[in-house]
Length: 221
Image (cartoon, rainbow, N blue to C red; front, side, top):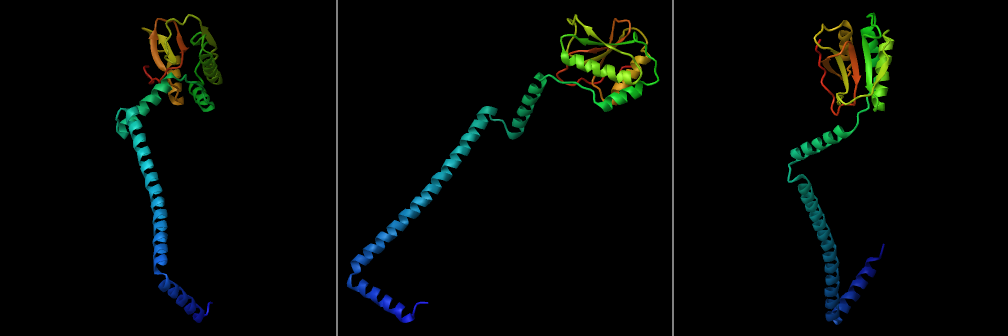
């Protein structure tokens, strides 16, 4: 620690120097003050300009958002994005596959019911590899329940649409026990399908192109 007498001597020397040359001292103080002010001014100017730049960027992003969404509110924007996602999903081919649980449920629901090979057919669109694989899945599920139902190819698909999986029964006839059990099995397993009645001689499962959106189960019969 510096001795008090030394501190006093230093202060007295500085005071004497100021008294002898007051103008240079005052000038030096002014220059020092100006330098400090300049440094502080530059510092805050940079901060102000940075804040201004951030605000301008935020405003530009907001304007860009408004341009893209035509001035939509956040709720409207979410709705537009949802519609876009649904449109993309509708254009994306769906890959259908039965899980092991679904196969077991279907097999349990049909077990004990006799089905001749002519009473139910699985017919898939020949041009669709995905439909072929799904038809094999369905055939395996029925086989586990004791039904011998083999997939067959539908070559002329001019009247086939994107119904996905269609359980068709003969029109104008009483609904068969086979069709009733297939409906019960599909409903229990959560399989997506549509139901139709056509001028055919036996129940058929048409494995068509995947539907863009999951069809609602039609539980007629």
